[in-house]
Structure formats: C-alpha cells, structure tokens
Amino acid sequence: MAHYYIGIDLGAASGRVMLGSLENGRLSLDEIHRFSNGPVRLGGTLRWDVLRLWEEIKDGLRKVAHLGVPVESISVDSWGVDYVLMRGDEPMLRAPFCYRDARTEATYPARERIGEAGIYEATGVQFMSINTLYHLLAEHAGDPGLLASADHFLMIGDWFHFLLSGRAAQEESNASTTQLWNPRNREWSDPLITAFDLPRHIFPDVVPPCTRLGKLTPAVQNETGLGEIAVVAGCVHDTAAAVAAVPAGAGENWAYLSSGTWSLIGVELPSPLLTEAARSANFTNETGIGGTTRFLRNASGLWILQECRRAWQRAGIDIGYDGLTHLAADAEPFRSLVNPNDPHFLRPGDMPAAVRDYCRATGQPEPETPGQFARCALESLALLYRELLDLLEHTTTRPISTLHIVGGGGKNNLLNQLTADSTGRTVLAGPIEATAIGNVLLQALTLGHLRTHAELRQVVRDSFPIHAFTPSPAACPASAREKFAALPA
Image 1 (spheres, helix red, strand yellow):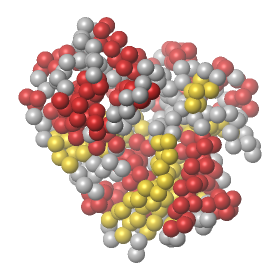
Image 2 (tube, helix red, strand yellow):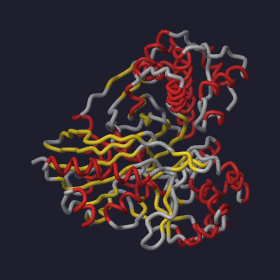
Image 3 (cartoon, helix red, strand yellow):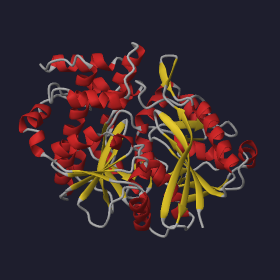
Image 4 (cartoon, helix red, strand yellow):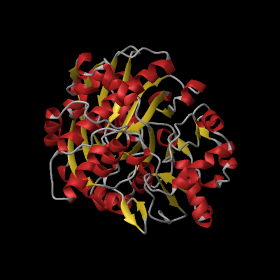
C-alpha cells in the first residue's frame, strides 16, 4: 500500500509543493508546483511577500487535489531566523523583514551588553547579525509599541502551519535558530529575554519535531479541494529536514553539507557541545530529529555566484548555471579567490563589482569574464569547506573521512570535485532534493509509517542516486590553500 504526503518546501529563492509516495520501502517524489521567491524592497527595507507565497501554496494544493490520490498529511519547511508578528484574529501585523535587511547593523553590537560567552552558554548559537535576536531588538528599538502589542511571533514555516491548521505553535528545530533558545533545557532562554528587555509574552509555545498539529482547516479544505488531512510539524527548519535525510549509514566519521544559497556544514551529535572551543570557532547547536544536535557552521554558499548571475541578467547577459560551470571548468585555476563569508558579500547588489573590489584590495587579478567569476566563487567555496571541516575535526575531536553533500549545490559536479580535492575527503553527493525528502519522510515517521530515523535513512539510500567524488590532492596545491587562508574576512 502506498502512502501519500504533501511537502511544502520554501527557500529564499523559490518554493515548491511536492507530492511524496512511500511504498515498499522506497520513496518517489514529484514536483507539483514551483514558484519564485525573494525579498521585496519596500520603503528602503527588505521584506517577504508571504501573502503571495500563501496563494502559491494553495495553487499547488489544488493541483494535488485534482490528482485524486489519498493524501494523508502535509508539512512545511522553510528557512530559519525570520518571523511574522501576530495579534488575536490578525494573522500578520506587518510584512515580515528579510534576514538580509540592514536593520540589524545597529543592533548586532547589543550582544556586548551580556558578552558573547554568556549568550553562547545560554544558546550555543553561532554569532551572525541575521539571527532572530537582533531582528527582535531592531523591532523593539524601531517600534516598541508594535512589538509589545503582538500576541506572539511565529517563524515563517510555522506561520504557514498556522494558516493550514489554525494552531499557533513553534517547532523546536526552527526555534533553535533564533539565538534565544536554550538547547540544554529545551526551552526559551528567559534570562536572555529579560536581559535584552524583550516582551516575554510574544514567545510562542514550542513543540518537538514530528508533532501532529491538527487537521487542515475547513476553510483551506474548501479552497483547495483537499480533505481532513493531518498537518505535521516535522523539522520545520529546512536544514534540519535536509540533515534528517542525509543517507549516512552507521558510524560517526562523516559530516554533512547542505549546499545551496547558504552552506551549512557540520556533524550530528547526541547532545549540544557548548565548550569554549566551540564558541571560539563560532559553531552553532541546533535541534535535529530525535533529540540530536546539528553542530554546524552557517557559511555563505552559492549566493555570490547567484548574485553575479542576476547582475549579468540585468545587463542582458543570460548564462545558465550549467553554462557558467562549463566556463569555470575551462578558466585558470586559483587565479582569484575571495572569502565568501566577508561582509562585503552579504547584501544583495552589484556582486561582480563587490568581487572585483575585494580582489583589487587583496592584490589579486580581478575576474574579467563570467567563467573567471564562476571559477573564483566555486574554488573559494571549496577552500572554505576545507577550513571548516578541519575546524570541525579539531573542535569535536571526531575524525571526518566522508562528506555528504545534499541540496541543490550537489548538482554542481565541478564544485563537488573541487571540494573533494581541497578537503582530501571522499564526497558523496545526493540526494539533491534532501530538504523535501526529509520533509516527506518525517511525516511518514510521525504517522508511524516508518519506525526509526535509521529506517528513514535506509529509505533514502534505497530510493535516490548518490555520486562519489574521490579526492585528488595534487589538484589543490598548498599554495592555493595558503593564499585562501591569508584572505581577510
């Protein structure tokens, strides 16, 4: 008997409504509806058009309903950090800000009130200006009356669960990205909330991964044609869903890389690691399935290349990612490198100019052709992955011989080989749709159609291709690693 599930996968660049079918230990996944996403400039700020996303989601659900298959549940995953303010029957007090909005530049230094050591001890979260904490502080500074008048906030994926089910609850993997969640006690950090003078009442109830939230509301049933299917909060944070679907077997000598606009690279631990070494290395502790900890670093991913391509498109030069990869393969190796985590590359804008400025300031030749820009972006990422994997080994004292790459970046075979060469580790790429796969299979786990996380990962191994890339260290000379290590960030 086949079981059917709807997975709504929301990314910062696009969203999809996916239909998953689990039968005889194998999963098939079909994309039913895809739509674009991206921040909208509004009054000098960057916001998310969540109302349009809601209409797109409903369009996708109508398409599923027309198929006539017996869907049993639905779940949403999304990027972390961002949130919607709510009050009473009003589901949205104002258009939610995008994490890349510059308003946190003024509030990020507020961490010095308590000190990074105290915040890390309480939350175990990597310090980044995009974290929810600094957006709430900006909210409090800019419009304290609005924040105080809100009943609560919900993060993006959880807000869509509210629209689907009518239940306002925050799922833990998403809450753990805020830098206001205590991973040891698994509750909001009241000392931090008090210390930063944030209104305690806006922090919502939190549920663990794989929680049934209820049924699809009658209104959504009427609008879409779907029945009383279960609404499930699996791992609502998209990286948590992707890591749940990493096709690793037994053993601990592996790391994961969720590769897309962002690169999230880490290991799966049985409990949080809140040591001084972890804080100094700026690793984060976020909740995973079954009480596990995703010990990782959040780093820039394919963002630089994506923004370069958008800039070229605005200038009338439209080269697809496959074309850019072919051009990069033919370009001179290690001609120009950047540190992808440098703040110059964080905001949207003229990315080719930002790359040229960085190379000029660091005494390197400026990229001139799309192939040189693409080669610079991909080689720089691969060298960053080497640094982070070495840092992971040192911080956890766990040897890492294999890197599982999941997500859209895993389609780039040049980047996969560059990563194997630079890190000296075997790279296993796939599945590409790890986030949607995790979304769907966590529903199966919640409903009892799978028994354990190990069984879930076996389904992934049995259902999707995985491609191996063997390292050739000679392809990444020590001079390239030394050149990258000397770059400022």
